[in-house]
Image 1 (cartoon, one colour):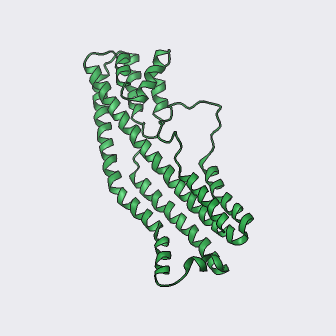
Image 2: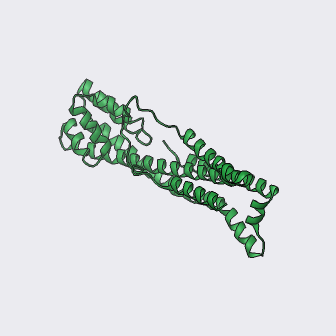
Image 3: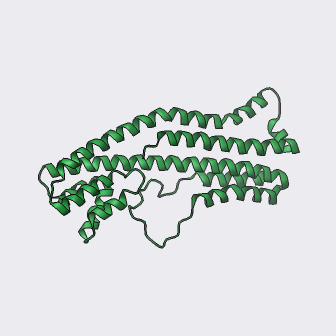
Length: 265
C-alpha cells in the first residue's frame, strides 16, 4: 500500500505541475504536419494508468485507489486546462482590444496602415506577427483572418474587413477602426464583469468537490476509521470507486456550467 500511495502521489504531482510553456501565447497560424495529441487521449491515459498500476501492485484494492486517483486527477487536469484556456482567451481579447485602439489612434495621427501596424505591434504580439508577415510580402488581411480564428481574437475579423476595404478602395480606416475599437473595449469590459459574476459559482463547485475530504475528517473526529473501512472491505472499495467517480463528474460539470455561462466568444 505504501508503494501504491507513493506512486499515485507522484502521478498527481506530475499532473498538477505546469509546463514551462503554459502561459505562452500560441502562434496565430500553427505549423502544418506537426501531430497534436488530443486532450481526450491524454485524459484517457490519466484515468487508465493509475488503476492498471494499482492492480499490479496491490490487486483489487490498488485498482480502486488507482481509479479514484485517476478520475479525480483527470477532472483536476481538465479544470486546470480550461482555466488556463480561459485566462489565455481573456488575455488575447484584451490584447486585441488594446491593439485595435492603438492602431486607430495611430491612423488618426496620420501614420500609414503598415507603419501603424508595426508600432501597435510593439505592445501586441498578435499585431507584431501580422506586421512581420506583411514585411515579408504576405497578405495582412489574410493573416488577420487566420489570427481571428484563435479563441478571444474574433475582433481581428473586423480589422481584416476594414483592411481589405481600404486596400481595394483606398478608403480611410480610421473611422471604422474607431468604431471597432469602441465595440471591442465594451465587449472586453462585459467579459470581465461576467467573469467576476461566475467566479463565485465556479469557486462553490470546486469547494463542493472537496467536501468528501471533510467527511473523512469528521469520521475520524467521531472516533471512526473511514479510510480503513473504504480500503478494507469490498463494500468500502465499491463506495470509494463510485464516490470518486461522482466527485470527478460533479467537479467537471459545475466548472463546465460556469465556463459556458462566462464565455462570450
